[in-house]
Image (cartoon, rainbow, N blue to C red):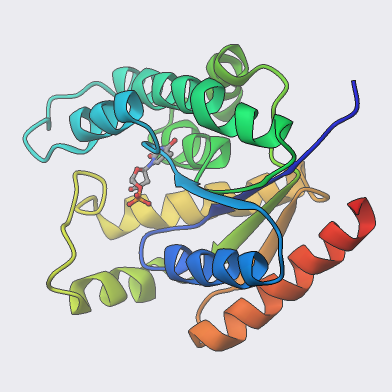
Length: 213
Ligand code: TMP
């Protein structure tokens, strides 16, 4: 079967600005006539948003790390079959705020469950559907967390309030994934202005889209 659509995921630690930049990218591509679906994980559809609320609830401090990993994988599965795959089959560009690499970096690496174990449960959840391109917004965790704290209106969830050393491990995990998936994951220096980061991400994605269209 001929592959249709184009699947982009964005990754990075808290406060890297990925959501803002990818929203602007989606808008720009839409204006150019591309059919773009913006979505996020965990969430994007009703069932997965409900799972998101369970995972991120600040009261759920007793949640076991494997329970957490399974819930992310469950939310991912439902979101994939209900929203991502139909959009790709319809030839759309899907831009997803976080996908499997978040689980590999946060649960596999930072929580210490192991990247291979997390990969196994996620393969059960997603089968062969992987992003065509992943943009990794790289930033020093201390700078990212400072950015979050500067936004007093932003709600701080159960993972935001983890220690700096946890977020440093997340970053280390992400950077090790770049070695594992060098063709898929593109690292972007997210410490710069939104405009500068957007420009770079735009050039990367446009190049990819020109190859397939
Ligand atoms: P968000 O703040 O980017 O919406 O993401 C919610 C949090 O969930 C964020 O701290 C990253 C975390 N997360 C994981 O730990 N594993 C995952 O698989 C995903 C998708 C998110």
